[in-house]
Image (cartoon, rainbow, N blue to C red; front, side, top):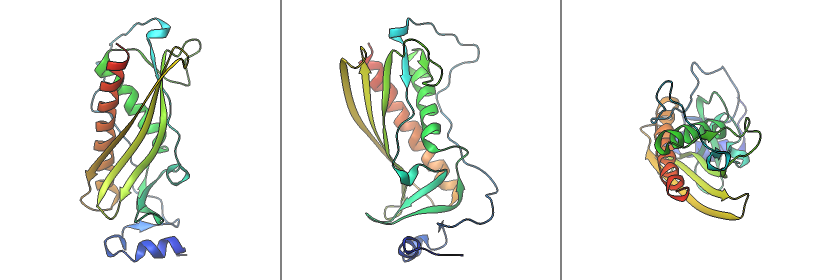
Length: 200
């Protein structure tokens, strides 16, 4: 297997020597996804005037996490990926779905998918997923989401940073998936609380 300079830097860390990879190889035996712990009841219906709806946009991401691999950072400059850990879709889209489901379930508001609204998006929540992966030095899953709420077509704007860290038992596929799912749900809960207060 070819090894890049980045992989060599990561490989210097004993904790990661058998857990990360930058190359290809055999396909993973399973794929990772994110699921919301707060869901709407079956057959639940919601109605709202356009301006009262909420649209959760897919966040922008840096190139390191614009992939279906799980990023591992080891210091300020070294990035690798967890061996055999692959998302079913890019994490930005999975993250957006969990936040949308959670906001809808916790606030009772109509939440629109940005790909399907046609007239009035209502309150828009967008932002950047600055970190979504594993901090090798601290053995933690970390999510940093810089969010912005726009109301009245941008006449009113409010921003907030959400950061959640969860311990990871080992830097392998299943533990990192579990930790990142838990962190995503905590961020989604906080976003729902924030959106609920702002949109009252």
